[in-house]
Image 1 (cartoon, rainbow, N blue to C red):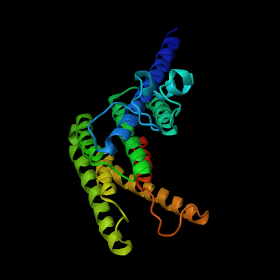
Image 2 (tube, helix red, strand yellow):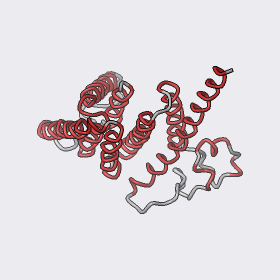
Image 3 (cartoon, one colour):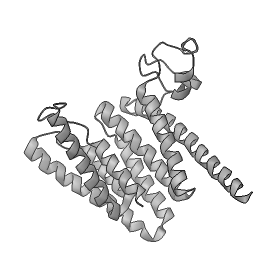
Image 4 (cartoon, rainbow, N blue to C red):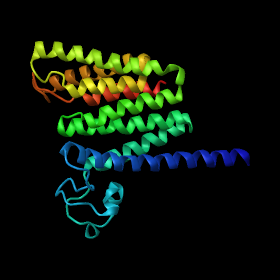
Length: 249
């Protein structure tokens, strides 16, 4: 009986985490549409026709399941809207199923949502926004320090190392390849990542992220999906390296 109750409770926690992940996806989708436009915060809009969404349409899964006659337009649900909600829902549930319920899991889940926002804006707009990286870095330092007060210096050092490495790489890249080789947003993202994973984790994040980008470039060049000199968003690869570092905490 006790084992059955514990199993039911664990399943309940996983389902709750999945629901919270979907809700986080709704927020990420809203910010990914609003922040790059550099306008005042506004309600969520349809990605197709830019009309304000009905209250229930903020949830992409609900919009996709609803009959078209109930929706305010014929645009349908955007792929990004569904992908973000589903991915974060599954990821939050996986974290709780794997690591259990703890403040550390909550912090990693919040970091994950911020990183997904970075990926979306970098892919869609080729921009990594200061409005995301600056608050994200502060939140990372504060939350990690609250979890482990004696190691507060690791998070500050990680931010400084991440920022410095990419700042130097950006200067060298501009001299070798011209403007755009490594953007300022990438440099600030590296600082935020360092604040999330600390001085010990920043090396893993940068190495895995760089390796993933290198493999992608090689495959894309061989398959001619990109041409020589063509630029691509580097942020998603940095985020991938960060996730690898975070799950190894």
